[in-house]
Length: 198
Ligand SMILES: *[C@@H]1O[C@H](CO)[C@@H](O)[C@H](O)[C@H]1NC(C)=O
Ligand SMILES: *[C@@H]1O[C@H](CO)[C@@H](O)[C@H](O)[C@H]1NC(C)=O
Ligand SMILES: *[C@@H]1O[C@H](CO)[C@@H](O)[C@H](O)[C@H]1NC(C)=O
Ligand SMILES: *[C@@H]1O[C@H](CO)[C@@H](O)[C@H](O)[C@H]1NC(C)=O
Ligand SMILES: *[C@@H]1O[C@H](CO)[C@@H](O)[C@H](O)[C@H]1NC(C)=O
Image 1 (tube, rainbow, N blue to C red):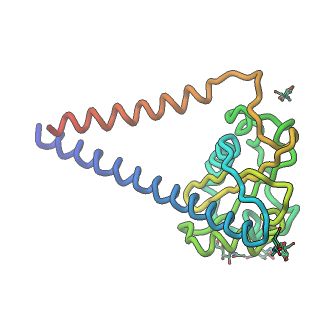
Image 2 (cartoon, protein in one colour):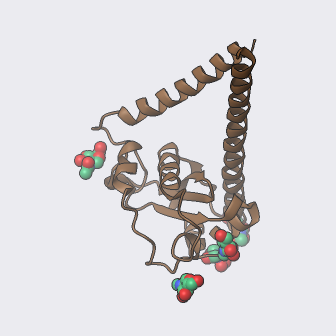
């Protein structure tokens, strides 16, 4: 009995390590894409894009919304401009990132779907699609990248009040609490399972 529950905990522990590793890999691809986009910007004499935390939050939120959608030709970078599926939950994602339409309307949200986020394909989905002209645009100064499963979302921001993704002042911070609580639970679970194995 005792050995059973130890085994169970050990496998839970190992799978949470695997899960964490997967998250790290996807973060690697976000970092990789950021570097590539910025090398491209520098090569055409544009300023490198600065990371914007609120834009990243929105990108993560949108990627989360897309995560279960298959890669088809009516979503993502293969889309004919103007036929993108409307982001029905966009207002909620904005709100959970403490953003509102006032400061985000001049930004650009660019989702792409690439099975397994293969780096070369991810890059070409942004540099060789209708998104390329945005990456080449002097008006964008900031960037946030988020990914989930096969989806990766790049959000570009400007340095004007209409697109700087400034944090909205009048909202509640329940979203923050929820994510802090999630992290707390994960940490607690990890330490409890570690302790049980001793
Ligand atoms: C980049 O800017 C520098 C100086 O501002 C200029 O000499 C160079 O020709 C530019 N390169 C390109 C590719 O536009
Ligand atoms: C999307 O794919 C379907 C079938 O694979 C095809 O019939 C349709 O023409 C494609 N649409 C576009 C916009 O490429
Ligand atoms: C974008 O990624 C898809 C895989 O989902 C790939 O088939 C397509 O060729 C890529 N498009 C570009 C422009 O690189
Ligand atoms: C980006 O801008 C440069 C310089 O203005 C231009 O030569 C290049 O063709 C542009 N590329 C794209 C993909 O728009
Ligand atoms: C958006 O935020 C700005 C600045 O915080 C505020 O003035 C405005 O009323 C907000 N708009 C909405 C629709 O919440």
